[in-house]
Length: 83
Image (spheres, helix red, strand yellow):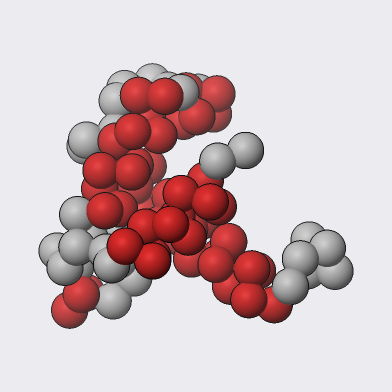
């Protein structure tokens, strides 16, 4: 993938992948124990991911958790999440 996207976009994709990784272990994600990989990409799961991300609950640094994402970061998350 590194050869197909710019370094900046690669950093953004890694950020969103990290956020999604932190989201899938949360209780808010539907059917945690029994879900399949396909269930991670349902509209319900993606909506939960979006809500957690916008609320700042998926931030990497512990001290930043709970700080809502700025609008420009929300756009990055949205653009990297939409296929």
